[in-house]
Amino acid sequence: MKADFDQETKDIKNDLEGLERRIRVKEENVDKRIDTLSQKESNIENREKSLNQKENALEEKHRRLDAMVEEQKDKLEKIAGITPEEAKNILIQSMESEAKRDAAVLVRKIEEEAKLTGDRKAREIIAYSIQRYAGDYVAEHTVSVVNLPSEEMKGRIIGREGRNIRAIEAATGIDLIVDDTPEAVVLSSFDPVRREVARISLERLIQDGRIHPGRIEEIVKKVEKEVEQIIRETGEKASFDCGVHDIHPEIINMLGALKYRTSYSQNVLQHSIDVAYLTGLMAAELKMNIKEAKRAGLLHDIGKAVDHKIEGTHAAIGADFAKRFGESPRIVQAIATHHDDGRNNTLLGVLVQAADTLSAARPGARREMLETYVHRLEELEKIAHSFNGVDKCFAIQAGREIRIMVENEKISDNDTVMLCNDIIKKIENEMTYPGQIKVTVIRETRVSNFAK
Image 1: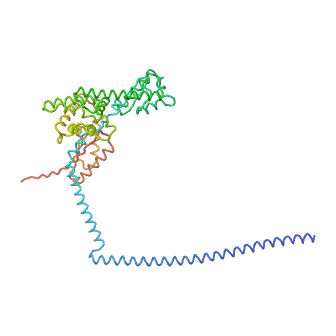
Image 2 (image 1 turned 90 degrees about the vertical axis):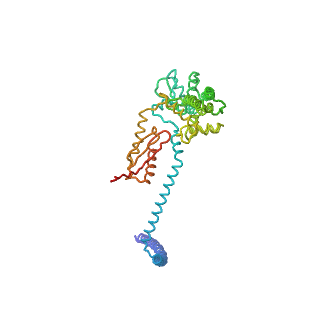
Image 3 (image 1 turned 45 degrees about the vertical axis):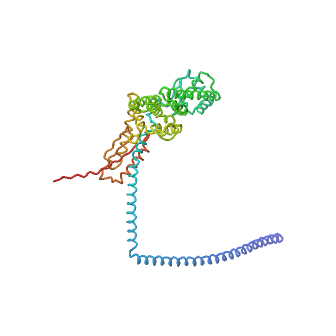
């Protein structure tokens, strides 16, 4: 028992010694940490002292700067003899008067420029570019229907995973629409020449029966050459029938391309031939050069052959092409101004303009859906009426111009300029229309009294 007790006591003693060693080590670590912390505290105190010193120095600098600024203000006030508030008011008044003077000069400059360029701008606005048609009418003149021998042909046109229809669209540049219409597919494109190429190509593919991408590309290339030949022959025939010779081949091609273009359902090539004859008749009555008059009448609308590809009015585009391909300046002038008001026009240009109007104004020559036309005019007047100060407004020139009368008590001369610009922006944002719309704002002052 004694031996056991001694052994147990020895074990306990060993454990206690181990604990004592660990406690000593921990105490040493704690002492080291306390020393480190004390060093950090002293560093922090030193930093705080330096920061306080810097802060005091900055405050001193601020005080000195404020004192200097106040001293400068006092000196300025003594020199100028006015207070800061009075100086501000004087500055504001001078800026306001200067701004008013600049605004008046700018308005006067704009008015003078408007007077100088008024006629030219008016002609540019009157010359309409690309016609816009109503929905049903657009469908009639931008799509072609190809009849099929059977419904089974639709699947062959589409091809495996749509490869045939994709090849047709890629080769011709049109949209091929296959829908529920029985035994028919629809070709849609704004370009009538492309649509004609696609129609002939598809009809030949259906007759041939071999429809695959390679065959499609081969047929389209052949048809494109044939259509180019048809366009060239059509242009040559039109120039021969009108007695107009020595026309550049490129212009002959543009003339032939008008065969596939319509304007308000009137074929543009037939319209150009009509204008050529009418211009020749009027030139004969006036003892003018008949051949030159016919030439100007025949070529006046060639810009419509490419006006969907080039930005600008068809008159300007046509004149540019005529000038490029060697037409005389008188012909170019007549083409460029055939939609002008005639005040600065040449006699030949006036004849072309008159013949153009006669051909288009014949009963049944052109059409535009009446409801769409009336709706556009009503919408135009409604936009003008939506602004404050507008008294009356009238849409004229078939919707190409709107004249607005304002109340002179509510709208000043300067306000009319801003009102005109605001109405133009609203029309551009909310309406779709052919060409351009001229907006004229009229403000008049009436003074009346009685002589007694």
